[in-house]
Length: 513
Image (cartoon, helix red, strand yellow):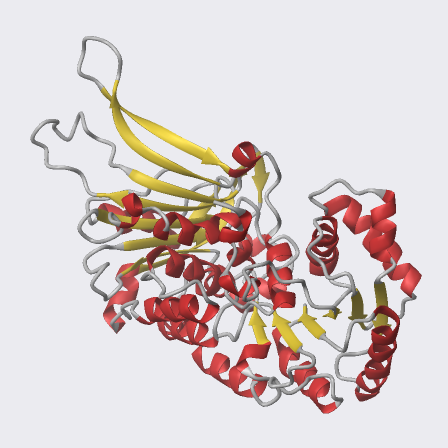
């Protein structure tokens, strides 16, 4: 398959040739934060290195601290050297940083936005960026609405029907804290922006393995024919992190793991694994099927939450041979905190394809290792030729999203020799080994797509709303309860025992990752 065939239809013109990226200015609000230095600026540098940035491009960092252009460039140069996935060359680095600028203002300062408009217009004239704007809101969600309102009031947001130029806004998760706040935020955002101008970024959707899910499923007839309740026994998704909350104690106390990972990252991955084939590869078709899938997740009855939704909180333990402290001992954490750092759930999807197939999901901090995997477990064949003790390994597909991105297929084979011994074997594919190059960072693909105006890999508001409809009752139930001794798990383990029992009660077990 050619590179062109791998990309969404929206990236090509009518003749089938790859579109040229539009000139634009990218304004990063919150430019002094870690995300900008560690992810966004290195991603932009790598895009330039790969020839994927428009020739007429400028990036402006917007933050509170007073700083000169030269100081900002020097800081970003060090970040690029440290975090870029590609080797930095002095000449290319200088060419890139020459297009970095800095603008100091508070996010709620009217004068700042009044001065920003002519500042950007001057850059338009000098660099030929044609008035096109992408605003990246790398800020706390409470600033989403105020910033977009002030951008609109100062003529920095254009009408979405303006064919001569564009303005787009990228916002980071979380999109709300629960169903009501998500609805309120959407109402506020759409006062100043059209839906097609809002790009809700979820960096998991930019990961190569996640993007490849649709290709794997819908371009391989031998696999898609098995992707249903006739052959699939269960699906397991694991998002594990060996680290704790690091310096994010205040954030985690207000969010918790479900808001941080499950409501967004994990639901996005689930929708791609289980959605129906889209009518085309257009953004609207793909997002429509994702919305249908998330809306088909069966909501728990009130008495089912405790049965099918498990939470936990890590206590002291050992990770990679090192002693680590409990969550309640972390900086800026309530010593009697009722916040979850682990969650596991059993889901059901009420549609024709997945009726009767349990979906098991789990995510947690301070687990034995960092991993994100999807495991599609197939039903065992009838035990006519091989009894279950011998034929003890079900077939499965494993998608490794991080680290060591790749796909594995597990099946059974006879061990050479006179004895009839069966052993599981694995056919394994890894991106970097096969293609001979490093996998692009997720933010590279997503920023590029936004500049191109392709929102395929960005979450539609309906996906977020349906996800919150399922998640909110669980969060509310957990807020009513306090942690019991059995809810705590040792750091370095795979969570509380209730997580294991969630599957054992149904005759299954978690796939070892």
